Length: 185
Image (cartoon, rainbow, N blue to C red):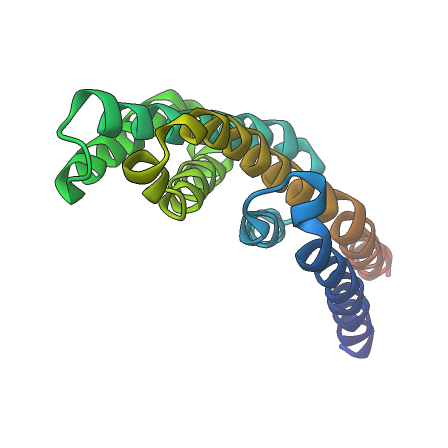
């Protein structure tokens, strides 16, 4: 029990340091949504920090960011612009599409997909004034947000792989050794 507390404290401290620097420096490296990295780390940790799930989580997250981009385009270019119903319809359509695409690996892909979609839409919500006041800057901002949210999501998953996988793997290794000793006696 004390070893678990020590590992959890180590993991929490390492994440504290990484989160501090990410939140402080994310603007300078092109990431648009620092919270996406923190939530991606949490999703990876909640999924058991199993590296074999990481490719599916990554695929789901990247598809989610693309889905968010397409939902935003649908809401701004096809449906009535600036209507709350438009973004709700477009978002719901792409949530359903994401569920269908990730149905084979739903528990691995879909949470990251939702994070990517919501992260993109949330980050773009900060820039809606551009369409009304300065439309020339809107497209570069959209593309920058697409890149930045993807970067944040990938960083969060990488952080989970680098921090939580080794620490939690030690815990699993000791648990397996303990059960093998108990079985051998």
